[in-house]
Structure formats: structure tokens, C-alpha cells
Image (tube, rainbow, N blue to C red; front, side, top):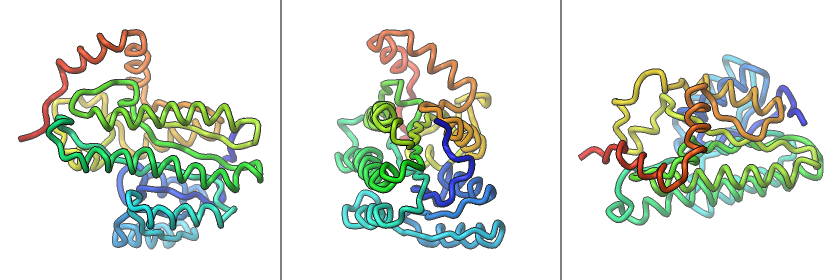
Length: 264
């Protein structure tokens, strides 16, 4: 089932930068009103002002750290109470490069809290209104890392594997109720992700990189067509298909040979 071409009101998490910010910009340019969620009030307010002035859209700002239960609950409450929201984009997420045994445990648990727990809870909250009204949809942003058990990114890759498996299964559960679930698996994208993750990706060739805007446009096209899985970029689709042919034990061994240790 195809999703509405232009959602009326979309909530975007992790909207202050990168792919989330690009989602907000592209959706506003197409006539969608927005609820923007992120930790940085300053960045959110600046973006909201720009989108209101440039596109004349209604843009609400909801400042929340999704790793904090009390702040996550506020975002859930908005989804429960505002049935106008017909698209939820679970974009908030991050990773840390490093040996699992040497990184502080809090960094790993934080990734699980943001990438898995918050995404799951917000999806459940959104369905509380979408399923009864038989409308709308959810886009969960994963990563090509979901298909690649990646040394030095072990927790991040595992959280994104969860996002893919959860989304594919949920899509099958909910498709008869008029709700679209699309999981998006970007590859290397020019955002702040690498610097925040303390990961040096400078050796990656230029052809593997995409802009956040390109990722967003492909993702929205896939969502609009009712596709369940979207891997933006031809190189990413080819790589994902090829790695799917290899036994996991061989795949992780090969990745381990090429994975660069974190800086420092």
C-alpha cells in the first residue's frame, strides 16, 4: 500500500542536524507541518524559524534527550495525544568507535537506549493513533551496518540490526491496518556522525558517500511507494547484496581486516 504523497504533520527525531535536519527541510518544502525533536534547543529553534519563514509551515519544537526516560515520555505523550501526526521519522541515533571492552559501558548502554529503546517506544506510541485511524506511517532509520557485524562498531551495528528486523516484522503485522512501515539503511553520509563517533572515514573513496539530502529524497520516494526496505545509493545496494551471499563468520573476518581502529 502506498503512503500519502505529502504527510500533513510529521515528527522527526534527531532533527537538529544531518539526515534528520534534511528530512525536516525536504518535508517542509513539500507542504508538511512538523514537530522537531532533538536535544539542542538553539539548533531546533534556528531550524524551525528558517522553515516557517521559507516555507510558511507550522513547526513545533520539542526539546528532549531520548535516553532520559522522563524526556522520552514527553515525546511519547505528544504522539499519543496528537492524532494529526501521520508520519513518524525515528532518525535519532548514534554510535561510538572503539573496542567494546575498552569503551565505558555507559557509551554502549546509551546507544542501546537511543537506537533501540526510544525507537521502539515511539513506534508503539505512534501506532496508538495510526492503527485505529488506518492511516500514516513510520520511517525507522537504520544503517548498512545492520547487515555487517562490524568490529570497533559492534554495539552500533547490533542496534541497527535490531531496527531492521523489528521494522520488517512490524510491517508484516501492521500492513493490513493501512499503516506503512519503511526502514532506511543509509551508508556513508556526509553528516556529523563520523566526528561524533570518533571515526576517521577519510580513507573511504568519494563514490561511496551520499549527501543527507540525497538519502532523504530516496527514502521518501521509497516510503511513498510503500516499500518496506530502502537502501539509498546504488553502491550501498550492491554491497549489501554481495555481503548477503557470504557466511557471517567469513564476513566478520573480512571486515575485521579492514576496519580501522579509532583515532588515538
